[in-house]
Image 1 (cartoon, rainbow, N blue to C red):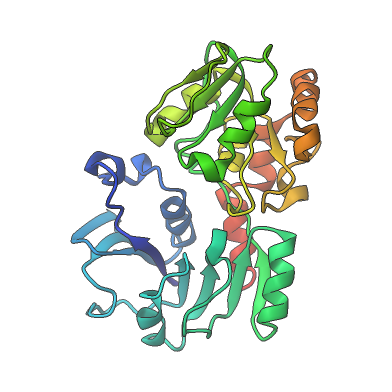
Image 2: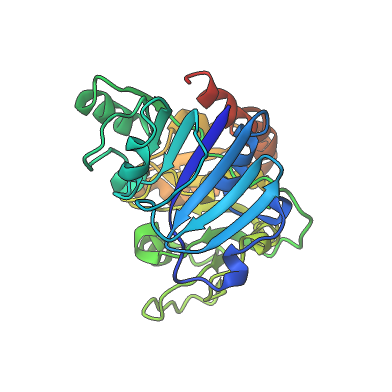
Length: 318
C-alpha cells in the first residue's frame, strides 16, 4: 500500500528548528507520525507546498516540501491520498490520481470540502454534529468520526513537581477561550498558561503564571507534569483541539467546555475528565481536582485514542 499524505503550506511563522527534523523519532508533528505508522507495511510520502526540502526518514517514508503542487513531477502513484486540511492546491494532486482512495479531513472551519474537487471516498470529522452535517451535505460520500491522537514520541507521562492546579495550553488565545478562563478562574486556584498569549491579555491574578511565548512541543510534557489537570475552553471555531489528546497522553485529566467540537463520549468520560457548560465549568474543575485518583487518562488513551487505534479505524474503511 502506498500512502500520499497532503499537508498545507510550509509554516512561514516558525523558526527552522521548530519544523525541520532529521529523525522521525524527533518529529513532533502528530500527522507525520500517523502517516509514518500507516505507511509502515508499504511506503509513504508527506507533502507540503511552498518549499524545497526532501527528507528520507526511512527507506519507505519521505517528507517533501514542494514549490507548487500543480507543477510537481513525480513517479509516486499512491493507493491512498489523505488530505489534512481543506486547501485548494490539493485538487490538482487529487485529479492526477483517479484510482486512489481519497480521504478528506479539514477540521475547524474547513471540516467539509468546499472547493471544486468532490470525488472523495471518505470524509472524517471531529464531532457528532459535524458528522450529521457531512452526511446531509455529501450523502454520496462515506463519513465517519476521526480518532485524533497525539505525537506519542513526544507526549507521554514524565515526572515533575506539581505546582499548579490547572494547565491551560494556548497559542491562539481568543479562539482557545483564554478570556473566559481568566475572567472566571476562582482566586484560590493556581493556573499555568503555556503558550504565546497576546500582550493585550492582562491578568492581575497572582495565582496565574504565564510563559508568554510559544514553546517547542517537546517541552510541553514537562509542563503538564506540573499541573493536576488541564482545561480546554475553545470556541466552536476549533475542532478537537490538540490539547485534549495531548493532555491525556501525558496522563493528565482534562475539563472541556461542552461547546467544543469533539467526539465527546470517546474523549471525555469517566476515565479522562469532564465536560461542562460555561456556567458549570469551574464546578466541574473542582470535581475533577477532588477526585484525581479516579481517572486513568493515559491507560484510556493507549486503548482508545492512540495512533494505532486511529490507523486501525481508518484502514478498516479503505
